[in-house]
Image (cartoon, rainbow, N blue to C red; front, side, top):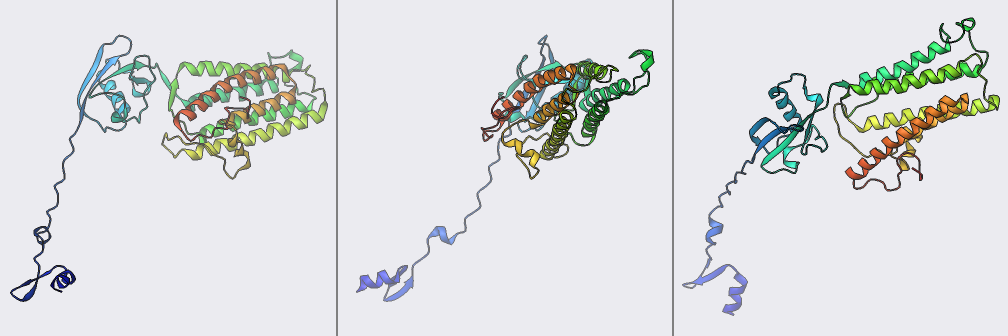
Length: 353
């Protein structure tokens, strides 16, 4: 019975015939002192910047914190202060881990780079830079103006008797409206829609791009607006089908640009996987990584069918080859950056290319 009573009382015991509570454990009586927070050791880096060509030391930085954000942009500012040429502003600098490697991004963090506590970076001059907006505005304004010069048949283009005359074929006027609409759309998108991940490009690109766009615009416009131009062989039916294709693809191209714009907040360089939205023109994202190029190709195929002009067909072919190169590059970068990227997508043409 005594044993049963002791079990029933649990934490009580008998002393001199009286039941008294058992003393609490020493640890329960005394309050635990809060553990002291251990200070994390601060890791510092030693950073050396060398010229990628000559391997000369440009500058040396001591005690750089490992969590320094926008580290590459910081190095560019340091190089701008230390190098002797004041023209090496940050936009024309390339900071690399290897002399022949890829440029690091401005938003890279030091602790995420594959370097030790003593890190060596290489500096390369990218040459004079120009903003993407300036390049786009220049290369798109040219074709718009050049085509109109041929359309109005200003002097010194065709024989004098055709100066400031107009074509008798209505498809010529329709082609002028479509061509002008296309490049006005591009100019407005450059100003109000596009958000560029890179602020600048090499200055030499503007000459290459303008030669391409301006030269093809003059070549196409010369034959379409020529006094001896003949309309498409199948007449109005062919022209109307081509116009429907052109307008459909122009709307689709604009819809894709809006969808891509909404993926990137203003002032950021974040990249996300583009997905279809409620807009039916964006549903092609289910099958293609770069549908803006797909719609662009469709627009020029429609314009080729509308005008039935060989220079337009050649411009479409060259543009398709170039856009395919760009689309494959973007498709590879999507696959590399996002593990959950949709596997059914093709770069530019569904199930084909």
